[in-house]
Image 1 (cartoon, rainbow, N blue to C red):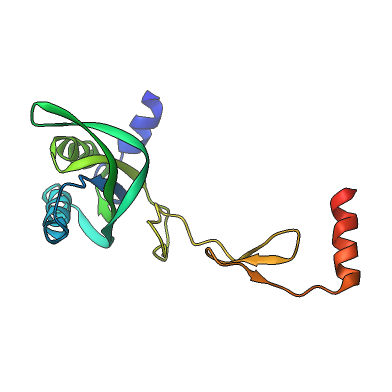
Image 2 (image 1 turned 180 degrees about the horizontal axis):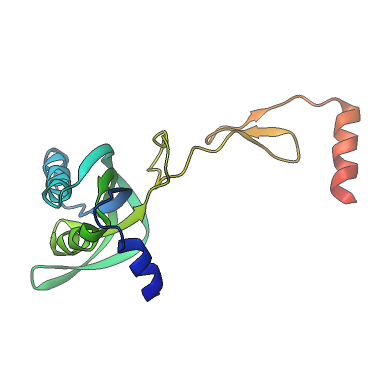
Length: 169
């Protein structure tokens, strides 16, 4: 693990592309979320980084409840505002940024990832974390799955028989 960290921080003058995904506390009013995002971007700039793109946080339901200390009390949250910011930063300053994000009381949870090189289009739902939007997938029954509403392709009886034969082999 030490070799990986050393390789990651060897060239401290070179900037790299990163992406931070975060959950903000759901207790904020919609109007104040933009101010909290500005604070996160300010942390990146304060460490010598440059913000290249972002997705405005949207309120989502979490897959499970997350415990978080607010003041002196421990609270549980089942929703949060999810957003992401893509930026360039020196590898030496990433750990400082992570420490600042840990100390930010508005952040419920976060993750900093090394973003892939090249232009990546933003994801249409949720966030990208550096992944390209997958092409339209076609399942074995000939249904083209695009988003949450699949588009059905009409199959002839012969094509349907051939598909069934392929499935049972």
